[in-house]
Structures are given as structure tokens and as C-alpha cells.
Length: 159
Length: 159
Image (cartoon, rainbow over all chains, first blue to last red; front, side, top):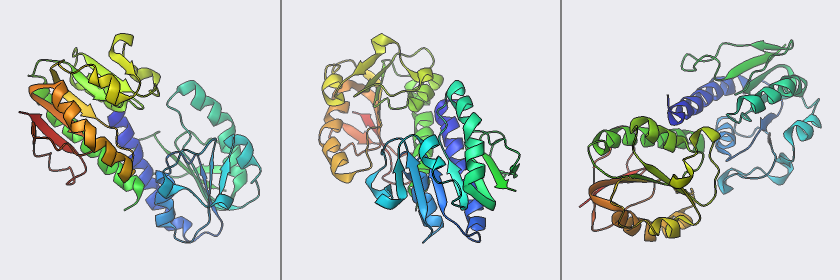
């Protein structure tokens, strides 16, 4: 499969998961944390699906399209592992992480710290969604929508 | 529509157009020019669809994934308008341009020089595909595949 095909599947999976998850997150109190703002497309989607909800976006540096830049108080720049760590205890309803690089060795490093960070950012009952694995005793894996290829996206509930 | 939705539609349209066009380009002699390598996903797709064909990729700077970097002799870095201009007369079978920015004012500037450049790079009968308009007397608009939303992608034959 070409990388373009693979990318389309990944983006489609991301949208389908977020649409499913946002219907549930609408009923859970707490902010949404977007780890990896990037171009801001997912942030834009979350804003549409969760009107009025506080969404805090994190990235190493700002690279988003002008239509998708959060308010200054909801944009946190710097190494995500460190900056997001300062928000532990915020009782987030949703943590969405899209910080996979396409390089297995780098993504394996992310998988060593992201699950613990996500678990500590979420309130009990909150949801974590990630393009890299979320193996953690406090994160219970949920079944993704049928359109999502296995092991392309991960969705968990904080227990 | 969210920017994520819009992006998925654009990528899907790009794939469907390239799949349709590559079946025809396989019967046309000449290299393929990829204006805007970016992450290299489309380049990777073109390589799969046109095995053995020379593909020359242009970009301002190299930002591609390691799996999608052309051989040194087929990678041209610098301002695309200038670097690709040096290849006029190469009689390309396909010119694919994915250099839209999502900013209307910047894309309007691209639309002032890209059509003429594409027309002069292509052989007669060759095909141009772009995410920005290709209005030019030597570029005859072709009908895109049915999955492609109107005015999201442009496909033309050099007459």
C-alpha cells in the first residue's frame, strides 16, 4: 500500500474515532487536550464537534493554519512531554495525541511515556485517543469503529 | 465542514485522480515531475503506480519521510518556480503540483505562474494535475473522477 493510501486510511480512522468519541465526551465534564497541534486540522474538527468546550493544544512549535490557532491561553508550546506534564490533575475529558512520526524507533520512545501522561491527565471515565499505542493499567482499551484498521489507532477509557 | 473533513476529501480526490491519470500516463513517454514533494506521500504513490518511470521531485527544502526521498539526481531543491523552470523542454508525461497553501492570497499568486510553467514542461498529450487552478490556453480541462468535488482538484491535457 502506498503511503498516500495509508495516510488517507489513518485520517479517515481519526475522523471516525473522534466523531464516535465526541458524542460521548459531550457528556463528560472537563477540558480537551490536543497533544500535537500540527496543521490544526484535528483541532478544527474537535472545535466543530464540541462547541464551547475548552480545548488546550500543545506542540513543540506553532505550525498551524491561521484558521486553527487556539487562543493564547489555550496554546502551549515546547516539548509536549514536559509542557503537558504540568497539566497533570486537570481532569481532562479527552486526551487526543497525534504525535506519531512514521518512524518506528521514535514512536517506540513515545510509547514509553505517553500512556502514563495520558492516564494522569484524564479524569476517571475520560477517553484517550492516540495514533501510537496506549498500554497502561489505568487505560482500558475500547473497540474502535468498524472503519478503523486494527492497530492503526488506539482508543482507551481511563478506569 | 471541518478542515479535517476537507483534507480527507482532498487526499482522496488526489489519489483517485492519480490512479485514473497514471493508467493513461503509463502509455505516454517522458518523465513525471512532482512539484512540491512535501512529506513524499504522493511521490510514494506515483512510484508504486508507475514502476520504473523517472520521477523528478521539486521542493523548496527537503521535508520528506526517509522512505520517500528520491535519488539525488531526481531531487531538486530551491524555489520551485525557478528550479522547475530550468526543466522546460523536458517533455514530461505528467506534471503533478501539490503546492496549495490553504491561503487564498498565496494560492492566487501560484495560479499566476504555475499554468504556464506546467504547459511548457509537458509534452503534447501530457497531463497536468494540480490542487490550484490551471487556466491556460494550452491546457484543456479534463473531467475528474466522480468522487472528486468540483474545483477541489484540476486535471488538464496539454494540447
